[in-house]
Length: 153
Image (cartoon, rainbow, N blue to C red):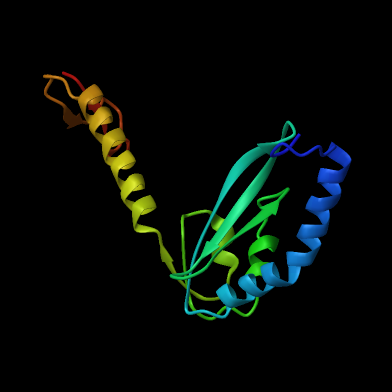
């Protein structure tokens, strides 16, 4: 039952497949419109479909968005969708984005998050490594100047 209509799963699959085929030219047109623009924001995320991992990529500009479903996270998806793109690509730090031959800007939210994580790790490290001992660089007996080390004496 779907909306109080009797519809078996085979008929639902057939309708879904027919609609996907009918709208494929529209979908391809949206992807072409995005690649023809001057700005694209791109990101990908892992999802689980029927128990196995796949990826959903999002490509957006100021007026248009498209999602691309893929079994992989390979750069080939970017090469296919952004073929001929000459604008600015805004993305996170996933290395595959560097394969797109265009001007790039890294997402400021991702950059801010990464800086905050780094600063937090550094603060934790400093707090853990700071004690009240007086650390001095000394040269143990017999060591050369290149072998100086910290001691807690």
